[in-house]
Length: 105
Length: 209
Image 1 (cartoon, rainbow over the protein chains, first blue to last red):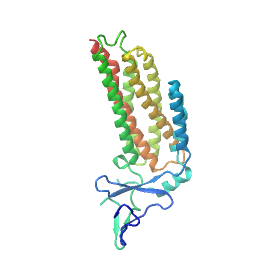
Image 2: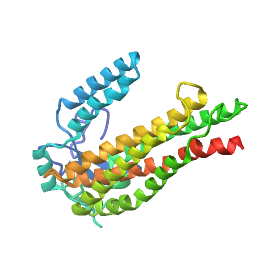
Image 3: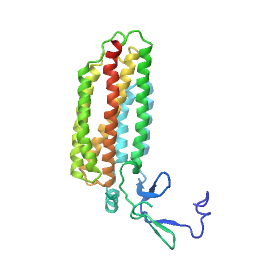
Image 4: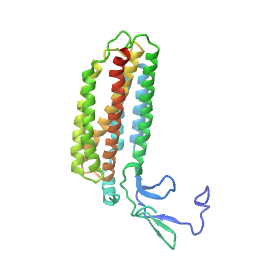
């Protein structure tokens, strides 16, 4: 990058990164000190589950103001929404499995 | 330059297509998140233990008007926790090699062990010999137990969900990373129980003497 506006400040011969997936939210992981790329990952797509988890968490906190059991019973819908959030979609899992690269032993 | 990277010229393109998508330990983002969570939660344990000894320093009698917790259940749980490290380390190492069968077996074993820990924990709570609302000693003991139960329960749910996932067709490299990190989290639950066990079960006896 050459400045705060990555697109407008780009040099004409700016190096580019190639090889990331174009049909998924791919990202690079880099080393801490020299920012050398060392792996690839994928962010999840849009889903309603984080919103539901937030609603469940808010409800648990609100009920806990009136009774401590709000946390105990409230943790059940929170757990359900978290599981729904992290449960992988079949198509996405199959796509990732087909493309996955394991580190060299 | 990291393995799997090639710089091509011209034009200047960094080809990352051969970089690994499955990474363990310090190269995994979620691993870093879990370490951060352990640091935060570990600090909660430290602060609660510090409170325990502060209250002791302000009391003439310890435990105040109560008997220490019964040793048996806590010690039994400690033994189960320590033994659980063997299957956990077994499947954690195999997860890094993508051995699905071993990871499935390891997760099933760990799920069963987690349930056993939880059942013993129930009896522990029944034999603490103190009430959480009676005095500062009781509150601190119950808070310590509550914090640890929360992690035990969280890891158990995590393990069970992961176990079920490993019996579906949605297993991919990322799930092996999850399995490995689940083992790391279990180690946190095991290791944190050692000082908590000493504080809850042995400190009252040593400080009383």
